Amino acid sequence: MTKSQFREFLFGAKHLTGLLVAAATVAVLLFMEVGAVGQEVGAVKHSVSALPSTQQAPGYNPTTPAKVALGRLLFWDPLLSGPQDVACATCHHPQNAYAEDRDLSLGVTGIGLGRFRRQAPGSSIPIVKRNSPTVLNVAFNGIDESGRYDPATAPAFWDNRIRSLESQALEPLKSLEEMRENTYPENEAVARVVKKLQANAEYQSLFAGAFGSEQPVNAENLGRAIAAFMRSLLANNSPFDRYMRGDRSAMTEKQVRGMQRFEEIGCIRCHNGPMFSDYKLHVMGVPDNPALPASDGGAQNTFAFRTASLRNLTFTGPYEHNGMFRTLSAVVGFYEDARGGRSRNPNVSYKELDPRLRELKNVDEEDVDLIEFLRALSDESFDRTIPERVPSGLPVGGRIR
Image (cartoon, rainbow, N blue to C red; front, side, top):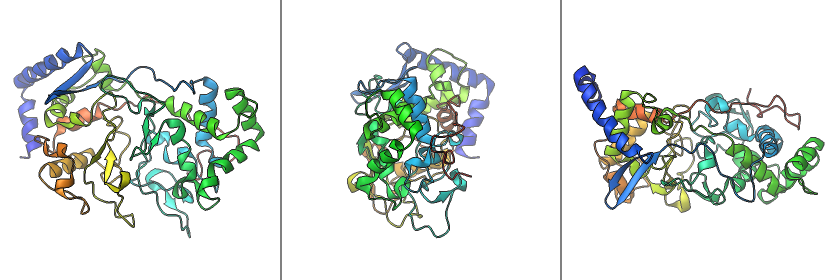
């Protein structure tokens, strides 16, 4: 009998289940007076809580329906890429909860969608070196345990190299592997995309309606429109969110126990706040993806990557910055190894791993309750709207069929 099966046997006994679940629920309810579940770590209290019902925008880019509508079209239009064959939505498709369902992204010259996407014959464009994360809830990037965040300085990308969605939205246009190809130099990419938009009468009208200036089609407004659309993509009504707002039936008994396990193990030290991320960089020693020609050194070649949000994991695998783990059990198993003194990346010694890994307690990849709790952080009621057409007249979403 495995450890997981033994745990299930214990909790399967009806009289014991009632007592344990009741105790767990009482413990949770004590914290729910302030809408959060937390753990004391030394002198620091870490907590998790429900997502806000509404999102903030920077003062310089207030959200309007016209901006969101324009941003949606831009997000789906392959006109923004050099060879005009890939859109933002190609690697952030609602079928995959605005992630991609493959370990590493295939941008320009790719054909197909998600795990079925492949490189076109004869293509010399390399694969993107990182996994494409979901854009659901990116409106809340940088949110802390108290619920505060500044959308004007919110961190973006796996290495936190860019601040704000407005800036982040323009970066893929410059990337050789993602959207630029060899069509034009990197330092000209955004200007060249803007020039294409300026030559399109429909986009001229849409930008004027959204921004109202004399020359509305410019790089700044391009980033602002896409950011406004991305901020509209919320998934903030998961079973966990409903539970924390007072619906005691929203989570199952396993999920309630799993929430307790999440705290006991110490996951909450890094995966905290409403987004279950501290948005900090940590060295975890995730193994390199063998599809890459060289190791990915992360932020400033330190092998540090940002703490991934645990929101919507049910729909957004594979996991970690390079998609090396296809299941949640495999992810938990990775942390079990790290806790036991093993680094899976030959470029990172055990001593170089984040010390929080050594503080984890009783990690078990067969922990059914923990994994069920992680699934309780998923909300499938997000916007899946796909435009029927885009102003360029190109295939919506690029070459995804």
